[in-house]
Length: 237
Image (cartoon, rainbow, N blue to C red; front, side, top):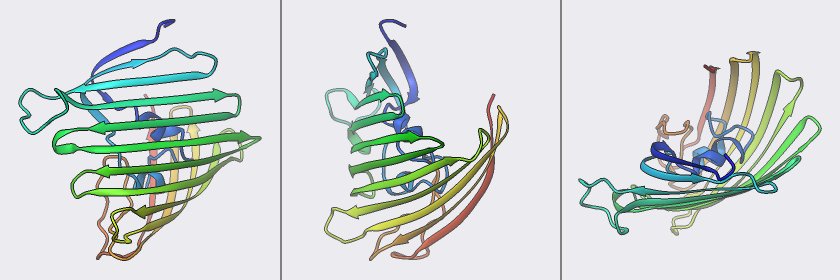
């Protein structure tokens, strides 16, 4: 639409959209995504009112306010449960993204994500940063994610990545993760994938391998490493 688009109701939060596909080679969708495993955002929003701008010379933005449920007596923020803003710029092989959220009430969480990707030939490189403060138990970390995807053919892709999270609460509960993944398109609608990751918790950190909005297996004890392999398929309708 020439003037953009308005969406109302339960939907993906704007911060989840660049998080899902524009900030790391793994699309934040499997255990291989250290960006997903080591950061914290709100992926879905109830009672959201979002505006998606049209493309203006490569620039786009999405802004959202989420209304607090009338039965929620624990919230604050002048009737809002949260606000979200996403900005992006795309010019040929270059893409730059930034997203912010601030939620209120029992789910108070401030989070920022940003990054850049660049495609050269059959490879695409990603570099991103994240930080956040809030949630229960409290998450107060920042970090970075570096990854690369290589397309051996239009159907076959492989990815490598590294991510690091630094504990800003003073407890030195840092973590980092090494990742690999491979995807093969059997058809335009069906993709097979395999991914593996090694996550190292430091001091008393308890990060684990998970997908978006999935808990994952907990670390055996505070500071324990977590390793995993994931096989699966994605069917598009």
